[in-house]
Length: 245
Ligand SMILES: O=C(O)CCC(=O)C(=O)O
Image 1 (tube, rainbow, N blue to C red):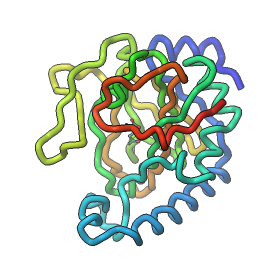
Image 2 (image 1 turned 180 degrees about the vertical axis):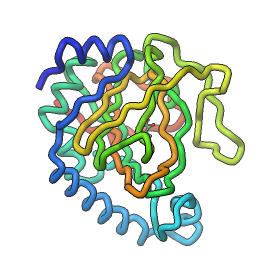
Image 3 (image 1 turned 135 degrees about the vertical axis):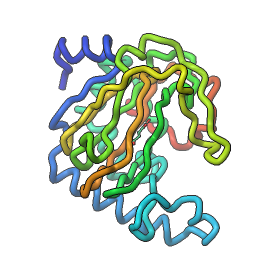
Image 4 (image 1 turned 180 degrees about the horizontal axis):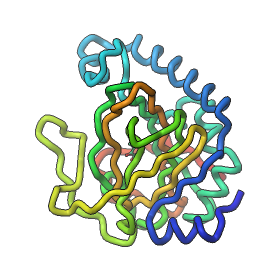
């Protein structure tokens, strides 16, 4: 599959593009089932102390995780999604041939819960030496809407630099852009089975889920194989890198 000229131009100008109907709703239902199964397995092996850290405190649902890390390297189902020829050809058109899915996350945003993710740039977290060759694929397992916490993007911020982020004292992993650098943000709703793709420098955020519906999604971060993560904020373990070539 190829992006249209208009979609390519939108990615270049805005730093993101939404592409609908990449996966079927049935495939997304299977993805949700697999995420729930994995979540149960994950919670069963947590200690009571770990549970305090991992469980989502923003929801009334018991035993609900906020996210799961590295689905692509850890579960065949999600690896197959990230390596599907349709997805890989879209990614290659934007960052070049020979790509690696180096980090991934499943986000559960339960009804009336699953707090916000403040504005940030993925390249601040990853610290790549070639900033134009890192991209995020975001797959909507459910319809992602303004009401249930879809992503918002800062148009054109892909063309700017990576700015300094800060983490609040009580959330040492939640690096975000200070108020002074904030820009207007555009909502990017995606229907179930659709995707958005954003440049590693693009400002983005998601809000609270104010609705009755779930907003589950998987983000997969790819880099072209010549990229090195030279100044990452956290460690991205090469044992989780999955080559798509
Ligand atoms: O899905 C979300 O709520 C946040 C996703 C995100 O910010 C990311 O993957 O970089």
